[in-house]
Amino acid sequence: MLKGVFIVLEGIDGCGKTFHSKALKEELREQGFNAVYTAEPSGSTVGKFIQTTLVTEKISPEVEALLFAADRCEHLKREILPSLESGKVVVCDRYLYSSLAYQGAQGVDVNWIKTINAFAVKPDIAFCLDIPPDVALGRIKRKRTVLERLDLQEKVRGRYLELVRNSELVLVDSNRPIEQVKADIIKLAVRKLALSQ
Image (tube, rainbow, N blue to C red; front, side):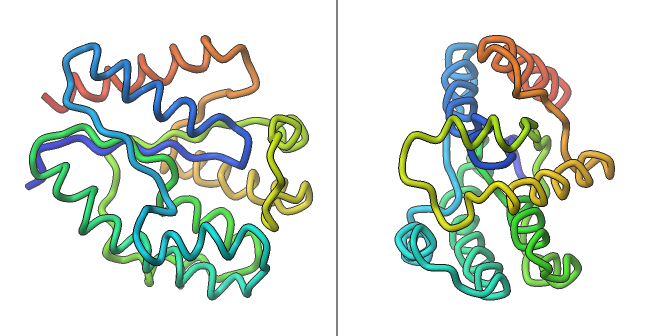
């Protein structure tokens, strides 16, 4: 039985996941929780390969799904599960839902994605930071990756909203002032933590 609490933030590129994941971790620490931040792709060998390769090179979405699943397996074993077992609150920037949304949007069978990720533990709460793709992509100041195309991001957003409708993700409107979004995420996360005590 895991003693910690697992929180995931999801959404299309440019929705504010990384900022809000780190802000949530800091706020939880200030409130006395032993919170840690982590992200996918992780710092594993596979994760580093994804970070360097998928920025410039388009590979088949099936191979993408396998690479992300391999990295996720390593990430769970090396970071997430040990932290949860020691009672920490793990705030994760992207997780299984990214594979369902991104590779699913490229035509990969969702049931197959779930099968190759059957090892993935279910988060206690997972947020979807929702924002129109044109607004999100406009926020990205660095060089875009091969996955950061408007047409693909629109499909990915549709997949995320489907996960919201299926009650797998909690919807947060990210197309608002940053402090409002931050306050909503913190309020929902703290409520979940109070229920988990």
